[in-house]
Image (spheres, rainbow, N blue to C red):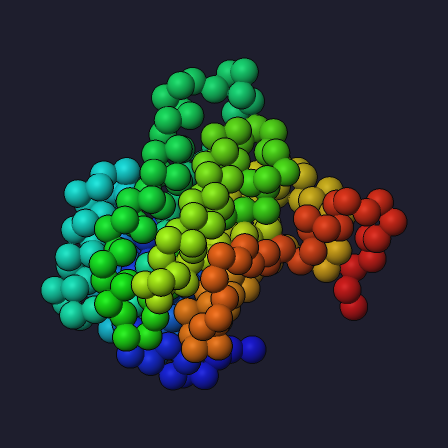
Length: 267
Ligand code: NAP
């Protein structure tokens, strides 16, 4: 199932971390739905490879090398976008870092690094894009990628869990402040997305795949396209009245976990 090829026609979308994983999945779906796309992250080679694939799909794509921990870099993403396309209608703060380490062994630098990328980077994206999003003729969209683990506690990932919970709070505040500017702010909370390096590392390589799958009512990991479809919906006219939502896309995992009875995979 895909959206129509004009679902995002005329929109200009920035996707941080758009060179790989979920961000690249979102970039592909946005190109397929008619958006012009700017992908930004640190590794130019990764961005170039992704851009080549997106252009082969017919996409109008620009890359910007940037570290979201650096506000000047994030302002540079916005400036390049406006210089290139004359508008910025969608900002998707997707870039993130994470690694497993128990809190008692976590160095202050490890904590600070993840907070810098995930939480500070998300605020920088919102702050730098605000003026352009306010000017969007479609009604600006700011989307941050959260996780279902943000509010339930995340043993082994205290830094990422706290950052994502902070992002959820930030989005709620921005919803209240920026609604008058026509800007719809939302989070998308993925569950475990099977075609990403993170899930391969954390569950498959660690021998925890079967255990994790058993906690998902729909019986399978998500796919990057599932998150991408949620993003297309929120950024299209169909999502125009959605603001301040946390769109959970997790196969029911955060509900299924609460019920020891329900554990029947979908047919
Ligand atoms: P990923 O494969 O690790 O990709 C992360 C992206 O962020 C990369 O493209 C990376 O590109 C970029 N990035 C990292 N640090 C950066 C920085 N300082 N500045 C700019 N870009 C930076 O992650 P993913 O699995 O696709 O996850 C995408 C989002 O979904 C994240 O917000 C993650 O927390 C969330 N999420 C994922 C899952 C999952 O199952 N995978 C579940 C829940 C939530 P460079 O290396 O080129 O900078």
